[in-house]
Image (cartoon, rainbow, N blue to C red; front, side):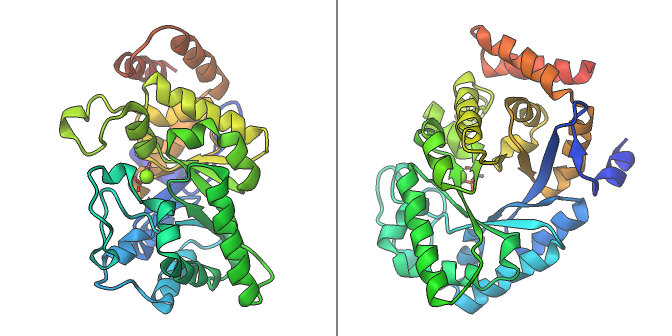
Amino acid sequence: RAAAEQQMAHESARTIDDVPIEVCANVAGQEEARAAFDAGADGIGLMRSEFLFMAHAQAPDQQTQRRSYQQALDAMGAHRVIIRTLDVGADKQLDYLSLPSVPNPALGTRGVRLMARHQALLDVQLRALLEVRPLDRLRIMVPMVCDAAELVAVRERIEALAGEMNLDGRPELGAMIEVPAAAVCADQIARVADFLSIGTNDLTQYTLAMDREDPDLAGRADVLHPAVLRLIDLTVKGAASHRCPVGVCGAAAGDPQGWAALVALGVDELSVEPARVAAVKAGIRRLDRAALARALRGWLDEPIDSVTLRQRLEQWLNET
Ligand code: PEP
Ligand code: MG
């Protein structure tokens, strides 16, 4: 079966009831982008640009960054590439940034919140991104957005820099939905975003107040907790009211039961590890989205925990 799945990996995937789902790949850098293309990914759903920053003793200059971002686009043929702006703080530190040491770094100045303090650093990154060609294959994604104003601030910065650079085109700009506040206000954020991408790793951590790195909680910090699924449902509905596409780039997008719940909830795109692309596309081709959506609503109408929900999903996927 794996060989057959591999053969189909480069074709786009639709559910049995004809819903197209893009299956993209998460990559750390441009080297992995090649692997993503070879694996059949429909694009890059998340390039974590912080790895480029963590690989250097100083912040990489504009040219170094541009080269890396351009290589990622070049590796992906005609497909689109989502590059996330610097997401450090919390579990990822940069020696040269001297972030203050605070008792709860996960709740501190991280992701887009760094912009106020390190505007120059982010300007260099945005300029490097705006130098990439073709710009209509690039999408810029902002991590840890809490409200629409944070995304608007980044868009204004892009406008100012693109103006200085005399650019005609603009890349699309999207927000990660990985803070419960952003999921609750997804309709407002969708009004000012070209796309949304749900970061289920952080969304699960912050919704359940369970540290994603804590081994004692690993079994319980599950995206299939009904509270997390309700927030994802809210995000999809909020985005739909503005015709804003929604992807998922957290680990749930590639997990054996998680991807199916996400598709049932109505997301348009899943971004997974390159090695999971073929299997997830194969699963989509076997899925009756509407039927699973009905079943899922029924399960979520009763008191249910993530363990039971996972079992039901597993059984449903095996039987259909
Ligand atoms: C997430 O939080 O789900 C996500 C994709 O971002 P990261 O894992 O890099 O925090
Ligand atoms: Mg995150």
